[in-house]
Structure formats: structure tokens, C-alpha cells
Length: 102
Image 1 (cartoon, rainbow, N blue to C red):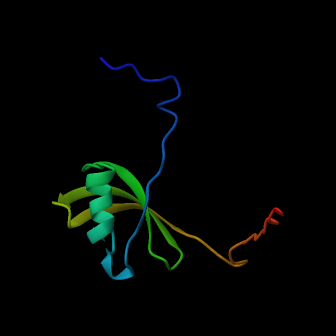
Image 2: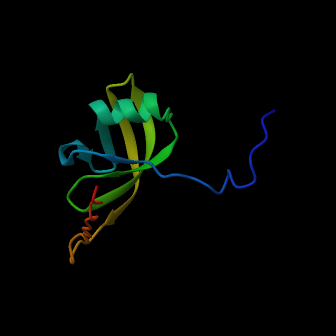
Image 3: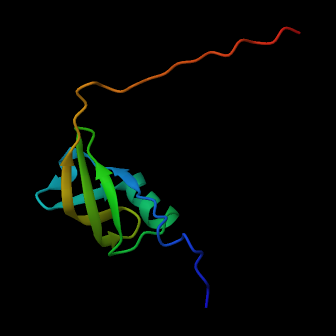
């Protein structure tokens, strides 16, 4: 039996995926193509796993994977929806390092 590290249970990384607004239907959404491949093959997420998705229009979804169709599509139920406001816009810092002489 493999022992878990002390902090392993409390250390969870929420995955974030892009979903097209046209793929959101009431309480269900679909991850397509590269997003579905990355979730199912690279990250090895399975049915019942929870993660996050965003639609690029200010909506953040907490989802649970309900069905995986090979690597092409993932159907997920929407557990929670949150509207993200960007009233101030993104904060960007730019810095330039001075080159060495020589």
C-alpha cells in the first residue's frame, strides 16, 4: 500500500479548461477536441472528477465530469456558476533588464 505524504490530501490543484459558449446548455457543458484530450489523456481525469471551466465571457463554472467519449468530447454537469467581474481590467507589469557591457 502506497503511503500518502502528510500534505498530499490538502494540496489540490484545480484544473481550468476553456469551453465555448455554444457548448454550454443549461446545467450541462461539453469540453471539445484539445481540451477534452488534455483532460482525459494528459491529466487522466475520469468520470466523477471535478474541475473548473470558463467561457471567455466572464463566467467560471465548477463542473463534474459525467461522461467521456474517447478523447473527443467530455460531458460535464455544472455544479456552480460564478460571474467574474473585470471592472478594472487586467493588471500588467512590464520590466526591462539592462544588458551588461562586454
